[in-house]
Length: 202
Image (cartoon, rainbow, N blue to C red; front, side):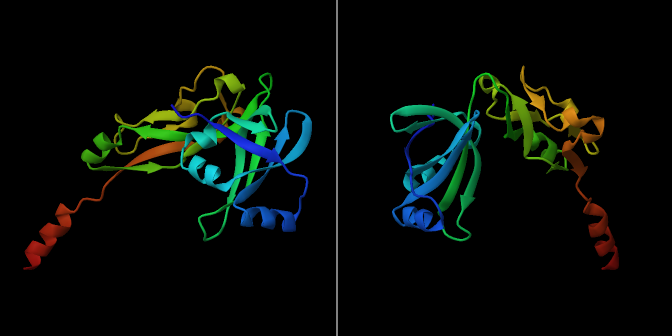
């Protein structure tokens, strides 16, 4: 099982020049905010963050940041990357308070697609992540959507999801007209008719 604990240091120098120097030293500048506390400028090892960002859980789990001997729980809110180099340039973390609800996004995992495609249909993903609110203890790593029993013309909306206890959809809370489609199944265009017309031409 992956652990999501990372070492960080407080940084006193801020600004573009300081951030540039840190990046040259193979470090990533970041900011930690939230939980009614003052924002803190921190820095992490670039190699640790490059490895971390390959794991989907880095984006959805509650992370532990060890900062100067203090352990702080947080979630990743934003990650900025270099436009063409394999470099992370900045990170935003939000502190986690056990008594305050989080507002974040979690990925959607689709299962059963093979059965749909074997039946000659195409699965179209409208959403690959959804916005949720929940207390930190209820934060799911992902939301699973089973499409195995869908046929052409079927779709699954936010209101069809069975979210874990204590987890709410941000969009649905805005009203029924925000009931977004998550996935739709479409029939593949038939090729046999085209082949038959070509045979007739010969």
